[in-house]
Length: 255
Ligand SMILES: [Zn+2]
Image 1 (tube, helix red, strand yellow):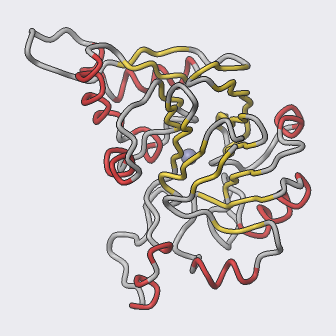
Image 2: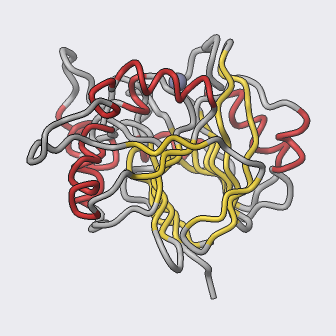
């Protein structure tokens, strides 16, 4: 029996798909899997749920998936598309009457304090703001009845947090996987991996590179995420080798 389920909340690149200000053929828009909110997953564990990144659509994503509670949030890095939904965590802070634990690196904790200073300020009774309990990322995080193994990958000049639980791993926003992380990605049943677009990108794996890395890592199934509007869901899937496919909003992976 599976320990838990990973739900892809968003499979889109930083500007989302469809992208504001662009025109698309009606056939493209008619396919629900071509509609991609910003990249995030939630891990549904036996005793609690762990949100991985907090996209601008976080509230709508969790409502869509029927997730009403979070034990903790893990932030992979602080680019806008991964943290701009954090204000909406206030509803859960209000529900629990306490801060919500947020795990990320010390440098990213500073960014969160700078972007959401009011979440750390004093307010009179009756005024409710989100409260973030910032915590460092350890080699393993025991959350929601799951043991998450953590590692860092390169995203241009930044380090981005990757996660493994059981034989499932999530690696978003990556342009290079160092050896230490590579070792953590062996023997996987399912890998979710960045494949931002067809053309090479300085900070992300593009399609060809992502396929090459996925083949080298050899997970039984790899799903690509952080996807731009380069991809038509079904057309792209028809070109992928077996064991590889595009992720989509709402995809569920047991682990
Ligand atoms: Zn990023």
